[in-house]
Each structure stands twice: as C-alpha cells, then as structure tokens.
Image (cartoon, rainbow, N blue to C red; front, side, top):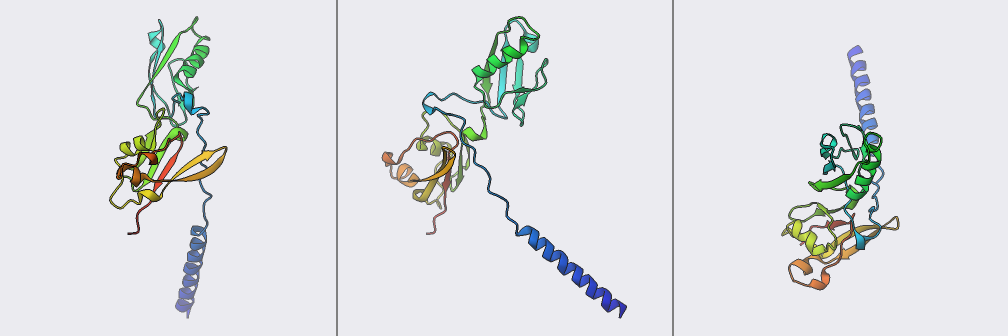
Length: 211
C-alpha cells in the first residue's frame, strides 16, 4: 500500500511540474523595440561610430596617448588617460572635439584626429536583410544607397525566394511602417523602376515562395 501511495504522489508531482512548465513556456515575450535611425538628414549623411569599430585616434605631438582602440559593446573606449569615453553614435569629427575637451584637463591645447577602420556602426544605422537572400546579413549603410546596392551585397535571391512579395520595414516618426518591394522584378527582370532608396535602419524581409 505504501508503494502504491508513493507512486501516486510521484505521479501527481510529475504532472504538477509538467503543468507549471507548460504554463511558463506558453508565456510570450513582448516584441523587440525597433529603434529609429539616429540620422535625421540622410541627404547630409555622416557615418556614426558603433560597437566593434576600430578607431585610430591621433593626438598631435602626443604619441603616448595616440593609438588604435576598439569600441566596446557598451559603446565606449578606454585610453591611457581616461578609462571610459562614450563614442557610440558620434561622428568621427564630433568624437575628436569631445576627446580634445577631455584631454584638455591633462594636455595643453590638444589637437585630435579620429579615423575609423573596420566599419560596423550602431545597429540603428545598419540595413538588415533576412529570409531568402543568398547571404542574409546586416549591411552598413552608405550615402545614396539603393535596394539594388543592398541586394548585390547579399548575393541576390535564393531559388526559393518570393522576391516580389518582399517587405521593407522602416521606422518613421516613431511608427513602424511596411512597404512592399519587387526584388525579383529588379534583379531578375531588370526593371530599374523597382529600385528604391534605402535608409539607415531599414529591415528587408524576403519570404519563401509557396510554389
């Protein structure tokens, strides 16, 4: 009798645990927030520094504080004089002036030049291509970039892509909007009228065909 009672209790505990786990797994996470591009005027687009960028910082007549620095995941760099300098979201020129101000505490009239290697940029400025592209990836925005330029970088469409049912997702005035784009007409049929301008932060979604 004790063994049967033990088996019943064990079964109840197992079922209770499964119920709790199922209840936990059915809870949905809130959708991710899509952040609008930090570029306010694309006509005068300037590159913004982001995590992963390699910065060459030259301080005139001060080689000991000059050097190459990788932007950390938190958007900062560490130099020999200052541990945490926020750099993400700034243009190289803006960062140079900011570093001059910081270094003026230690140096007399510092003159700083910043150049960027290994361009990555902030996520909000990248164009992300997902779905049935040959090489889905994040693409760094370049001034006057078009849909055709992006598709060349991702290697075009796969054989299973429904390119004419693709969507471009864009944040405008804080609102998410979707636009239908005809990628197949553009790159397979040569219809240049299907080429459109892309903007920093755009997301291109290419579905799979059902046929």
